[in-house]
Amino acid sequence: MKDKKFLKVVLIYFLSILFAFLVISIIVSIFGYNVIKVLKTLLTTSFKTTFGFQETIKKTIPLIFTTYAYTIPFMIKFFNIGGWGQMLFGGTITAVVGLTLPQLGINLPSYIMIPLLIVTGIFAGGFFGLIAGFLAAKFDINPIISTIMLNFVAVQFLDFIATNPIYHDPFEGHPITIPLPKSGTLGFIYGVPVSIIFAIISIIFVYILIKKTKLGYEITAIGYNLDAAQKFGINFQKTILITFFIAGALAGLGGTFEVINIHKRLIEGFAQTSGAQYGIFGVLTGLIVAGDPVGVPIAAFLMSVLLVGADALQRTMQIPVEMVFLFQALIVLFIVTFRERFLRRT
Image (cartoon, rainbow, N blue to C red; front, side, top):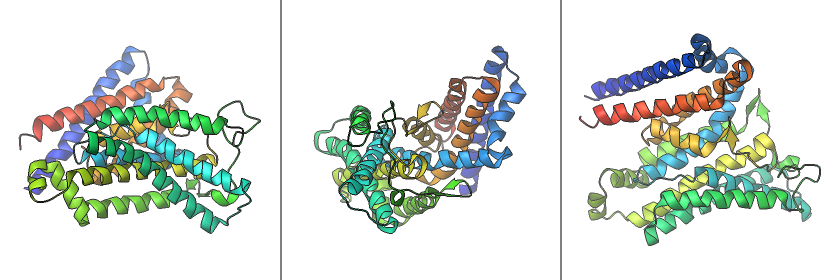
């Protein structure tokens, strides 16, 4: 029975992607582009060169974190649209700590500084996610509204810090801070960010949390049947708070690594890629896996393949990135439609 359901899921994803390819091929041909060349560039750029693969991994890492930020609250039927804001806030607070300590004469070695900044990002993002969780648990305020609004708070807070004379780089007109101290930055392994190690640890952590712990059982039970879960003594309000804290913590961790590993400073737009912010891509990726955290790493990698391909299409064929956004949206649309149509009947 399980094998039959698995095959049905595989078939649904295959047909969804196939239909999306067909529709995008029609659109591309209408605009006069070479369909074969467009699809080949889109799907193979990540694998043709070492640089292409490295860029794919670079995009996959933050996307894993923002997708988790969406999928974990989604398991209890809440929509966290604030992964972007939580990522921004975590990265911003991390930069503040990393830049302030040396200014106070506190020069920590890297083996202390790096863990400190990582913990800072976790708790900063967790706190920012917890705000929306608290509003939902205490006042029944829809997290869709609160997380969207908090995104704007995070953006303005980042701009405030990045343009503050204490932190701002005087040689830059863009909102950007002076570089972090070397003890507060991570490097690369064969062109791949060291943060990949922490992303893998996070994948293992989420899997164990959801599949092997009491909290994971409670989250799953609430997602299946809230009334039954409450009758068996599961505290719904407490679970809301915990899930939003974990979601925000993971998004904040993603922001921390973008700051200390990729940019090595705080910069406006650090949580964006290929013309859009990671929070939106996290939501799209979360919808592709139906809110199941277990499938996040694979879906995030495949989404990053499309993003790298989109960048190549802009460079080589002058195709606007919005065309790829349309392609991604079509994939999500077909997957969700087919899944609802066929799986809900079983």
